[in-house]
Image (cartoon, rainbow, N blue to C red):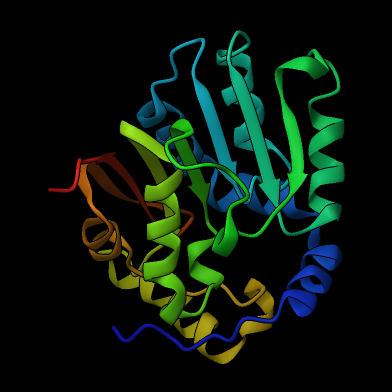
Length: 220
């Protein structure tokens, strides 16, 4: 199916997430918690690594990554300060020295080349304009170390007829889903230089997701 058009407006995005932050974890539990389990599994965190989660939201996955990597470096960034505030509360029982939470933009990651062993991104690609997908994949590639990995979850089209309901919602009532819609992202990762290692399509309460694990290949 055609990827629905979206425009980039940081102010509107921040306002949208400010409105939903109070029930975001409940929504995630209903529709994204199954995907989160696969993300953590694919991440295969080895304690002592350098990890970046882009669009860490309220910290649902980020907390699990930090718990597995308390001797490493863990950075979570998000465009929404409201989301980061909730994430900080969620991580309050963990030593503050093992993680950092920062405001940040995926289109201009404020990190050096080849910095992270693992880059994670959950349900963010699906709200970005299609013409930014290549730039996002390139930024992921740039900050990932050689032979490092990315693990990404996206709102997908799904493989069941019932999954099409969510495309209809995204097309006709985009504000309900804060602008998110079904997308694909493998092609962009491969174009940037990644090798796809694993992927899986899942459905939770009819909501479709795809989880992708890719390795940074060395460009010739």
